[in-house]
Image (tube, rainbow, N blue to C red; front, side, top):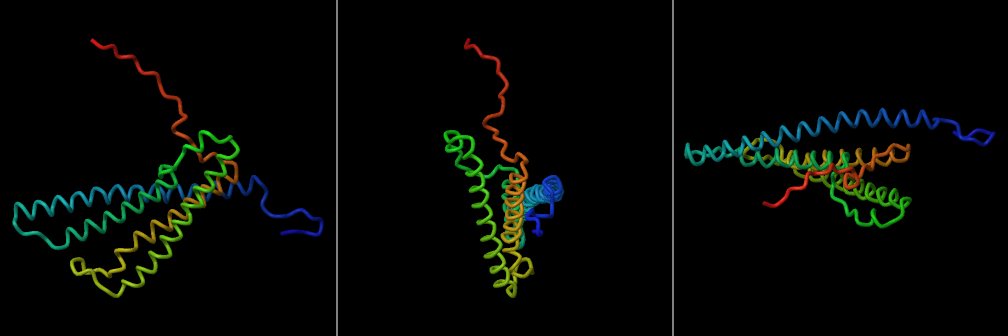
Length: 196
């Protein structure tokens, strides 16, 4: 809040940074949880597909729910994994400009990248929620679940992408380094192999 003397009262730089770091710690736990759920989903999908193949070719009686269930589980781990990739900076990027532009412009490009990810996340939430609402009254026949369950991963992954993109922007604003470049890390020397 502004007072009569002119300066803005409120959070000091250290207090603001502390709040951002606490917010980041909570998001770190959410990210870890999303990663474990995605990993579990990958294993579960593999088991469902294996059961489907075994039932079809060995028992000659294929259950109707395994394919639909595997696809639903797959959509969960894809969108959760994409959100984790945004937070951990593993998402795809076009880094060529980062190597040829001056150091000061790199932060701007990374901010633009985070804004683009945020925009996509917002679109995923908006349209995902519309699809959930539109299909909720229908039923997935093989699972007996509302049709909106097919689109919940889209909205959930989009919400996490938004949170993680905002977190990256806030951390950068607070002066925390979030832009580790794995291409510039020290690579250990490897012994030279001589041809025989």
